[in-house]
Length: 193
Figure 1 (cartoon, one colour):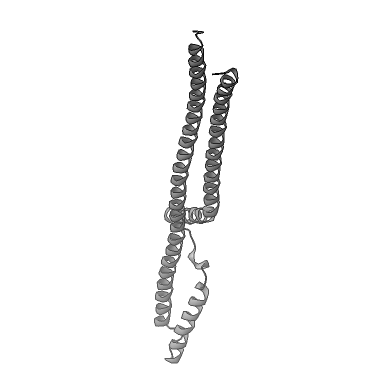
Figure 2 (tube, helix red, strand yellow):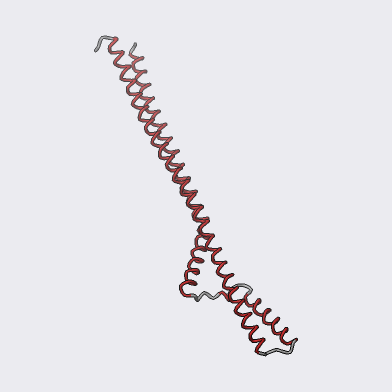
């Protein structure tokens, strides 16, 4: 082989090594981009579900306080005053129609009505808070799913980056080895070794 053939062979080995390194670097960049994109999606998921988690945390706090202190006032719920007012008016009208307004029987009926509506209102309020607390468990489940997806995507991206890096190093090694073999073969043919 001529000197120009030897030079071409050496240049080919160097170009092959450089190409392998460039390919590995580009593959690593793509893997890094995939990893960053997956993390951005995860952060958006957490941001999207934050209001549900916050609402659930407040509801759970209220439920805890209700059980511990018993001082949660459900009479401030929507419609409570209206229901109580309408119920008292109905009882008053009924007693007045029978001539028993302000009687002991009417007082007893008003007391029973108050206890019944108080108990029902407590149950409604408790059920509303329990429903709100349930929003948080759904949000947490969605966040866990997103976290698992992120973990898989990042693992895949890291593995792909490592494989690309290995492939690049193997390509460089192969190109250098090929160049050395070509040189030794030519040197042997010329009787230099």
